[in-house]
Amino acid sequence: MFKKILKSFGLVLFLSSSIFGKAYSADLTFFTIGTGGTAYTYYPVGGMIANAISKPPGSRECGKGGSCGVEGLIASAVSSRGSVDNVNAILSGLRNSGFAQSDVAYWAYTGTGTMEGKEPAKDLRTIAALFEEHIHLVTLKKNKINSVKDLKGKRVSLDEPGSGTYVDALLILEANGLSEKDVKAEALKGNAATDALRNGKVDAIFVVAGYPTGAIVELASAVDIKLVPIDGAGAKKLTDKYGFFSQSAIPSGTYENVGTTNTVAVGAQWFTSAKEDDDLIYNITKALWNKESRKLMDVGHAKGKTITPDTALSGVGVPLHPGAERFYKEAGLIK
Image 1: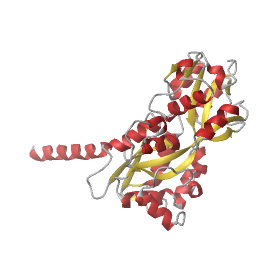
Image 2 (image 1 turned 90 degrees about the vertical axis):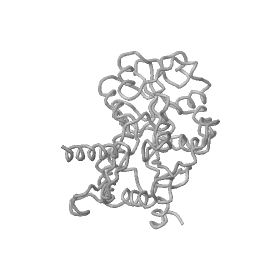
Image 3 (image 1 turned 180 degrees about the vertical axis):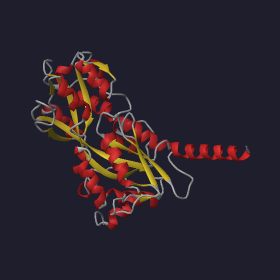
Image 4 (image 1 turned 45 degrees about the vertical axis):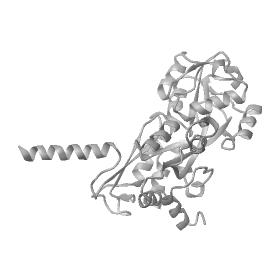
């Protein structure tokens, strides 16, 4: 009986360590990656990266059909509300790492911009810049919404507070002479947002994600949609004021029957805490950029092909974690 109790207690300890991101075994380390809604880009990319950096005990050797990740590491992608939520979870110790938009992370780190008045997130550190995210303003083709200014008085999903999309949607409205009060704002995410648009419960939705994003692909296959351009004076005002944004475009054919659409973009980056072990982050960064990981990136989500060492430091505004910095110096990417 006493042995059974001890076994049960040991199982509870093991499960508890798994839940909170770290194991107390010398052989295992658990590492969480906060992503976003399961219907958007962060989540599948997070899963792809988690697979690339993981190497559980008993795995086959690297180059012989096994993982080339970090020895004893089990990484997992965790769905979340997005950028702001991930930054807060990293700082609180709830998650080991997470994805966030470069603008959101910088403002959190410095206590400026949309985070003005809040305590700066001085423990936030960068692992890598990943890919470009485009702001999608989606409506049905039949709706008479052809510019951001046409949103006035309309039912618009800005995504959930705690997401980077919500932050950027407000900035885009502001750059075009509008505010949240000028629209009938809804806080919907992922499939809930696209379902509401398809069923006529909202007139337009904002989505910030790497294209193609699954929820919009599915929506475009079911109904006729259009992407509303985010360009002209409003886009210029936004990019002039905030250096994180760049004017870009979503190519024709990305979504069914939707032509090339001008918009603005922001960088998606991977962050962790300064409190995470230097050697662990060094090994994770090294695993992220090895040749075997490249193979996983190329056959995973479409954005995987754009995640390369050449852009690993692009637009980084939050200091690198010392472990990541050591790898980039060894790789000759920084001096």
